[in-house]
Length: 183
Image (cartoon, rainbow, N blue to C red; front, side):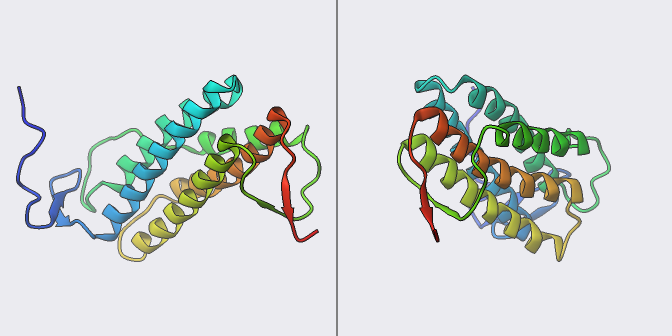
């Protein structure tokens, strides 16, 4: 059986797709590491949602989990990588927008900021949203030194909007009054 450890990273480096070794705090590693963290939070949100019967959210989150693996892969490419990898595409961004639009049709108009809380599904939506925003910042930092896909940037930006919308949607479905700030 193959070992999980390789010892190749013991001195603070890791390999990108394409073989280039970089420091573990390289902006690309920071970016795909943040997306990896977001994926773990999305999985927890899906688990919480399943427990309370929010099947529509679980299905949506399962697709997003696959998309996030694609974003991670895109961020982990060495600058000179010439091969093919699975990528998020413009239609994935459009799908997020359609999900936001569909969910928004049943929600009261957005008038002020929402304070997280009221149920663990709602709180986890907000945790995912804030981690997603950090992903966006890390991707922007990486883009200052390395190519970062504009589609991946748009995907992450739109995903944070969807996660906010999901927090409102889940509050409605669970019968939890939204906590509003700035009324």
